[in-house]
Image (cartoon, rainbow, N blue to C red; front, side):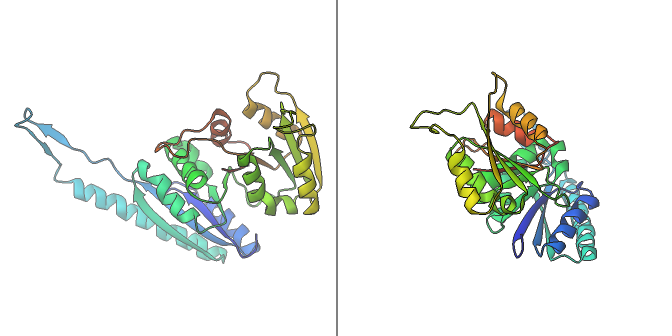
Length: 281
């Protein structure tokens, strides 16, 4: 959205075409694009010798050369990305960091805190450990939402919201509001809703539908039974049937744990590669 900042989390293998697509979209919409390239730090080879307590540890003499070589390659790739961004004419910058997987969530969170939304480049699916840590950093350590499988060149005309009146779902809808306002249709989908008074009430989804209608959104509300199937699969199936361009979903997990431990639905929606999803926690 105009005058906002988008964070794009990439790695050295992210294709120039993906970066260029985001840059072109940023230029057309007056968005600043911040690219954060995560390079994997090579594991330090440490060899033990002798028998404790008389032994010791030894680091190969060429370790420094190996590390410098990785850093030089990362710098070279950063310069190539700068050229792609300059060619697009977009307001954009790129920063590269060499880091261990365990540090990724904190690094990504630090950058996401001063952006409006974060995208995870599709090729990060090839390194699920990096993907999970980057997603964890945005969701649980920053105030913004994260978009998986993002296609910024594709207009978002129909949005599918998986709604259950939870705090996470409400946060996701608030984060997605700029996209909802521009969409032609917003579908509120309730799966196996709990209609008790202290849960979602007699008409699940109508409260958020009324609120979004005041924002000028064209909203419909639907209730779907899961029939005992996994909720994530039901969300994907119903969103496909409705021709949704974007799925909005509240993310669940254990934010206080050092490792990213997502619930089944969140994990499935994060790891699938076919549908564009916006998650927030």
